[in-house]
Length: 274
Image (cartoon, rainbow, N blue to C red; front, side, top):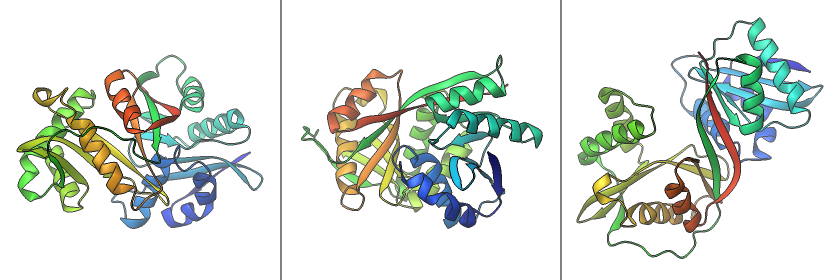
């Protein structure tokens, strides 16, 4: 097996596209990141590489921050992971962590830092092809607009804090402003705004949802269910499926998504390296 690194996102996509779309739902994170890189030139060159046995690609890797994102591997994936870690170490590629399908990510972490790697989050990858009949709470779904910036940025801070990945207020405001400008944030409004969700990472046939958040005072009223179900119905008029990552330690959110019609197609784990 050998590792091939490329610098151009377009060239990399042309090499790994068929490999990634064979399991487009499970690969929505690396594929979505890669498609965004081809649409919006990154400020910092990303790390893009794949492992192949002859002409057959076995593993694709993408990194725009410190965490390496692994696609779902094929073939002799253990050997592919071993080939990747050896190559990365030899080329002194700095990694703050790894995210990927459970077994490949676990194998990668054991090889990279046998003693120091720590699990950050165990996640389920869910896919939705059709929204099940669910009772909607009073209110309606609407796009967030510039007048919602203070609210969305505040809720984004709260969301990240609850996910144990806090971000500074100025960064939350920057992310919220960009999302509102791109028409990606949606709000559930029942006289006042009570819940939010964001569409993200469109791929060829699907699109992901994240940043689903309802403030504590509005929870247990079905607002999150109403927001996500209504947004998914809207998105399924354009895409074949929706997908999302859930925290497996949060049974409430997992049940909400299953009730809407999401089904778990894979597990993912995020490791942090010291």
